[in-house]
Amino acid sequence: MSDLIYQILIAILVILVVVLAIVIIRKELQLKRSKKWNKFLFAWGFREIESYKKALYTEWNIKPENLQKCEMDLGKGQFGIVTKGKLKIEDSVFDVAIKSLKENHKDLDVLDFFEEYSLMKRFDHKNIIKLLGISVLNEPLEFVMEFAPLGDLKNYLLANEKSIMRIELFRFGLQVCEGLNYLHSLSILHRDLSARNVLVFEDGIVKISDFGMARNVKYTNGIFTRNRAENIPLKWMPLEAIEFGTYSVKSDVWSFGVLLWEIFSFGKEPYCEDNFETYIAKLKNHEHLENPLLSDVDIYNMMCNCWRERNLRPGTEFLIQDLNLFLTAKNHNLSVVIV
Ligand code: ADE
Figure 1: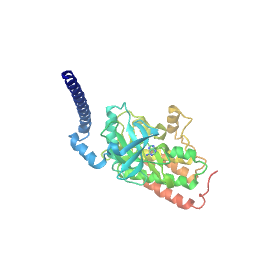
Figure 2: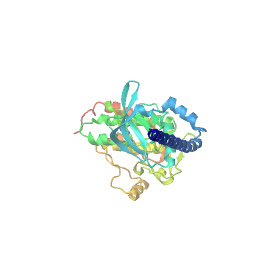
Figure 3: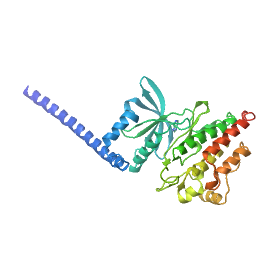
């Protein structure tokens, strides 16, 4: 009997030691992570993690139990992967896109995560993808965004070439330009504008997404100079951005011109036959993409204006005005299905 009691006591002791060890290890891990964050947040202007976390809880942080990832991968970027998910709000469940920071991320990626978050939470425009929240209590850090059921514009154009009406192409261009104009009105540059970074919703609505390269340029007289190596989308970039790392609203306008070309070519790859050297040689020679089969003189002139010397490129407001004029003028004779 006394042997049995002895064994039970030993078992209880072992369980207590294991539980205690688990609690201590979890506390240690939490402390380690919070120290790491403190380092970033301090550099970023937050003195103390607790007050920051409180702000996240009340405003933007999504509790892990309200978020569920599905199997479906939506894309992969420098940052990590984007997956389809479900978000529970009160009694309703919504489709969402979840962008997760990759597992082997560097310290700088965490800083980029918070920078992108601080930009995105300000956005409120019909042609800009909406951030619904972030999930930062567990690893990986995640963005939760509205879900675009029809995917990205490049693949949408490639897949639906036969059924899209030509007038729709003008509408896509106009909406992207309105989104870009909104970003510029907030003194934000996108710096990675292309058809693969525009998402398509039902009813022909398109929205600009992916703000991984976006930067605030308020305090630098409208010019942003790159200060670290980045994977830049060369064939959407003007020479001044490639050679000197100089970005402005006018470098976004250049990219918008290439995006218009992608739209009117139904998702073709720009400069697909050029390597880096031949592309740069073309830019230096003022040689540009050719007129896509489906664009007319007006829209091709608009693209070419976006590819002029920086100071001669139009601003987004001017482009919006012209795109509206084209839409009104062409409304009658463009509502035909291209076959
Ligand atoms: N791919 C990247 N982001 C997406 C989103 N928000 N919705 C659908 N597909 C996406």
